[in-house]
Length: 557
Image 1 (tube, rainbow, N blue to C red):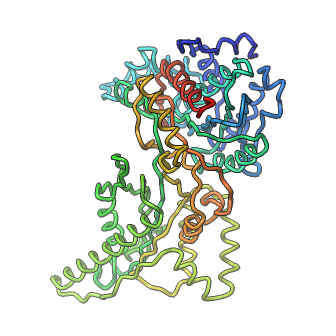
Image 2: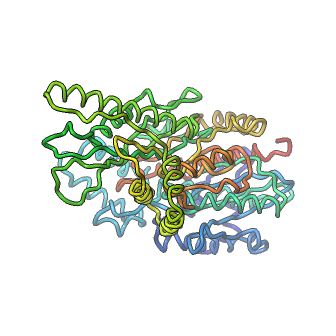
Image 3: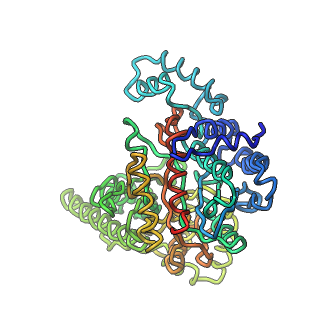
């Protein structure tokens, strides 16, 4: 499909701001949905090239092909896409988003239709009408799809409708006479957000190079990611001033294995892990809060032992991993929380064992609990024998291609414990995966204040909510907010598998600028009934992005 000059002109807003954005936003949304881009597939690998080819048809990029370029997210991996629309001066706004999606497997037999929205709508309606005793969620989906206001499809909500809004704004920006364009607009679209944000993390260095090469001052970023609203949409029509942070603490308990018929002659690793789980899981006391908004409390993502066959001996090692979200806590504070709760859990189990043993008249193998960090264990093991250092380096080389953080972390934890002379009861606490830093524009001084003033005006103009923290883990964590190198170095020390997939390089130079999220809303993203609210996605959203961008790029900004 060829974009013509008249097509671009159709994206020009009227002087009073009343403008039909729908044709261009819907054009881009349909186009993007026709290109499946599930993470780890050929679709993700080629989408940046397909989109670049389409943008290259625009007269502006035909005349300035060097301002449309791609960057590998990692060697042999998919690419980031950059498109720079120049105007007057150095002031620049970045529109960012990700084009990878989660798998379509949960569509079941409808998976072949996951990227054909209208055919999928018909098939979903047939399925929902045929459902016996549908619950509230299915009834809501049926109503939404019958209304015609919601478009289904993999990536329709998360987040190709956000990208489409950004592309519509780009076209309208280019439709202005060059001497009337205040500032510059830079598109930055990335892969791998649904995995380890390797696209956005690689894009930071490219963004720094582009700013130097083109003489750009990055004033602000607008991320275009999606949010969920199971109500009337008023909560989904929102601008977020920051994003939630995430850490993945991992804990491995080493008990004293014993015959199950004589449990008090040992120490149960399962009991210690269960007590820690009880103390952490959905405990509101451990929910981090800032700016009057609380993050969800910790959630256990995995808890298991590692035996492959039946045995009446109690397991020696039990592992668990936790999703811990933050609005203000530092990684060190999260580590201290985990160490404290782990120590308390072990002490509670030993006291309970001691009491039960006395009541049963059985001997108890008393012992003091040991709690240490993964960094301490690693340093201790590697210092014990020269060969350990070489073997550990070889292990990390094997794990460079591993993308599952739990699998990588477990291998490292077992490797270290196998070579340690320590015996249970022992707990080792560390981090299992990439740190997603929390962000907030209040951390950016005067630049953050200017962005917040613009956000307040646009929120009032478009009846949008202002919220402090975007609840979904997002690329916002890596756009414009460099992490302290000392914090990154300590994170590497406590990370089970410090490979590039799971940790940032503390020596990477980054730009610093405030970023907000302004994206589409819908329901059930990542699910088989994923759907985006179409009127807002193709009309309200691009209008709001346009107005926020224009305010930020005024000559007096």
